[in-house]
Image: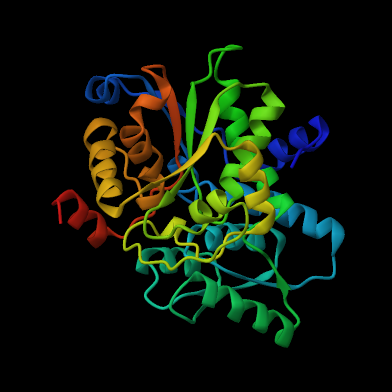
Length: 322
């Protein structure tokens, strides 16, 4: 998946109306703890608390050009994608319906409702919610917004362009860890790496309790896998996207899996060393960097703290070590 310079420049202007460039820091306490430099891209500092809002901005801008008659949209999410749809729909004066699985994050649900979204609870996981959203789209004549699409990746790509452009030529981190949910984040990182000419190796990170992308990467074809993660809902994908997998197979140095316990430890470390709140998927890159420390040979690594939208009671239990 590649984009022209004109497309990227236009996307950056569109995203900037909602999201200013987010900071990236090499925190001294992380270096002291781990023994190597770790660059953190703080996508938890967007107005929606996560990177997904960028994709919503570019998707809705292109939708208004392609299909100006659309008045209602629908999508499925575990939370952050839904907020991006809510932000985009509100900016463009559209009605938005979001389907979430039962037992979804209480605070993410509240954030979506605060954006004027009509929330529907259905199914036990994201895949079931997505299938229900597709059925509702057909029955009610709504535009279905997928979780993976070229226009979404273009918006997400803007933060990775910011990240790679933050380094002098040849000085980007040796390895960059990218959490993989439905795949837009990894595909965006690969596109931004090509766009900027960075030479960092990209490692996809999945939950050890939601391994469709790891299993599919190893098999070279899409394999469904059960989802049992209790913490990394942003990576709770049951069926890999075929287009995203093709990019992963071509661009990833590797794909690694981290457990909920490792993610929880990374969440505690990030709070102690940077005083930033990370949701499960947001801490997965650090968890992988810790587990995979030998890959970079002591050279700097990077990851995106992709979101900080974790329910208060969940975060309290994580900090307490439960």
